[in-house]
Image (cartoon, rainbow, N blue to C red):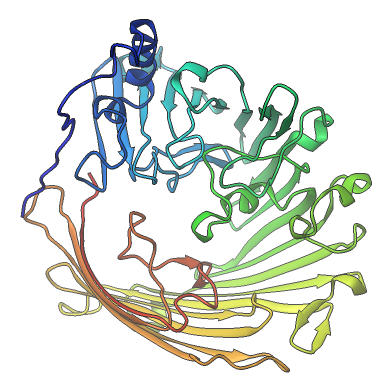
Length: 515
């Protein structure tokens, strides 16, 4: 196999000067800006789909500086700021066949200061602030590990759409801080976020609110108070030999958001999963106990309500998690983890089970399921069973059962699994059944199934993964570019929901390299 890449195919390069069309001063400004922000797109003549590839990512490492650049569907390098992923792995350099990014970071020789301090600094200018490759932006962060204490500060900016107006307005600025500290058996984690928003100029007389890309904030207004643009996450954990407990609190204002994290795009909910729904606050407890070595019992309750009640009505109805601003939601997730090795003649194995239950305190926000309503909901449950080192032929087995009641129309029961065989082969198979709630029309595709085969090619550079899949009325796999031979799960249910690939079928083959 081979890969052919064609870059910079131009009949003529007119980016610096063209008589009666482009002044040299403008061309020089464009050259300086785009060489820094999106070099491949610039040197390709700033054309749409001017290169013959799906995406491109390359770079170099040195003792003093590391450099990485990407183009089109290439993903930005992800970053985690303590409890939050602040640059997520789905954010693309520019899916609209343009765009790009550069990333500069400190080399290993500059990261260590003495025996107890490690620092890093990353600068990521890009043309991906709208994920479509049309808006200039920047992500940047500085981290420091000082003994048992870790600090992380990040700045993101969304700028103009053309090289000569890049800094005329700053439409969005994110300031994100994070801290993690160890104090013996106690771990403290803290994150805080503050947004500053600008307006979009339509003409000399009219401006409109800025709409951040891939966010549940539809339009962000200037001049709102601090709490509207603020989000936080605080956690304190205590761990002992046979038990542990975490106390947590999070809150999110009416237009707090994060650039370079997706919400809504491609079905992802990465912003609200981390910050919560708009204008909500939550307090939670995560606890576990090990009464015996082979058994772990966990209980994870939380309570959630509106954050700024006086401003609840300012949000659109689709942005509010509840109808009533005084609604409280109570949540409980019991789970069991059992080491079953002793029960299966010494074969390493494990069984995990969990359920998610919810309760709301107001009649207006009762959970609707067909014609029946209730304040109580068993929303989700599942089980996972794994075995390893079974025989020379059956290397490992992994089985998931999922009960998905998160959809108001359909229940979805799924059973999926994978068997690892010799020569790095894995066989995957499963089935799903949709059943309607009372008073709801049943699905015309109630039964789904799939079969997949995965092979890791050990003798080829970087060990690519070859896969073949047939899916019918359900799709258990991750999206292209996200490790599409792996199951896409939220807990033990399918992350893409009850309706994933309903009334569709597909046959896929692919070869995936992680370079």
